[in-house]
Amino acid sequence: MTFGDSVVEVGNNDYLPTIFKANYPPYGRDFADQKPTGRFCNGKLATDITAETLGFTSYPPAYLSPEASGKNLLIGANFASAGSGYDDRVAALNVSWKQREAAVEKGP
Image (cartoon, rainbow, N blue to C red; front, side, top):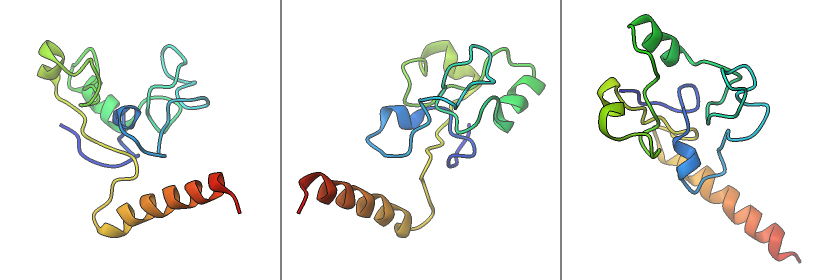
């Protein structure tokens, strides 16, 4: 099981209404299939390397992904979400950002 923020995020935010996403290039360019994976890095995370070191042949899936079911959950699940925080100020930042975007779209 993995809990955390963007340092260990593997794609949960692809399934959440948030501005913090890593599902576009250049993210993932050094990963096996060179496609964005939801990870905020070019390739493997420390949690991926840990899973390999422990002998797993795949990485724990993002808990919110369709792959997080059945036998895939036997290796664990990743609950990390980029932009998550330990206090209300992080949530307030996300709300403030969305209010700003709405104001810009609305115009003067």
